[in-house]
Length: 245
Image (cartoon, rainbow, N blue to C red):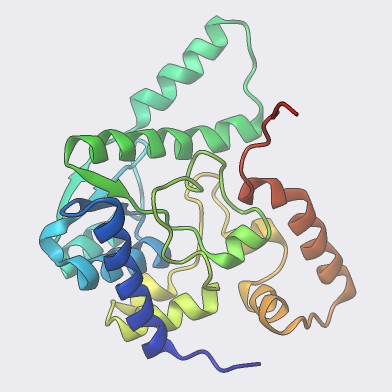
């Protein structure tokens, strides 16, 4: 397997972001939802390097009280970017209450996926107000097993990390000089109280090795990864549509 060249990747992604904005929004701003985790941190840092900090806008979106929001503040202060805090709690509660009023009982998955979908709506509201383009912050490892919310964090206008694994993104974050607390923070959706790896049932280290080398030592884990990949491929495809013959 070819060794990951972090400096070449850094240079290539930065140029790709510049090219995207040249073709799809010359003079526009990059709007990034800031969770305080490695993905949004690396995306924001790459956008700053590509466009300059004056064209990158961070959006913090707690849902009520967010225990780890200090990580988000750490990032925007480290990068020196303009940022806005928009609490989505009332919006989430409003939709949830309207569901109840309509006689519907929200499933646990509905409750988990509603906040990221409202966050993405919020990002687009900000973006259209500041001449922006919304950054997608998903990575290859998460996409491989469907660990994203369709029309939530899986949406966006451009996706700098879609071909990079969690392991590679951590390396890129270090090369960008980001605080280690942001890069090494255990990945979590911030919604269910568990880490990503708790929910998945395997580590990103195991997943990334399987993606890049095709090697997984535990047959049961391999089967679980393969099953999740098959089940969630639809998230990465265009919406099916009927076309007349």
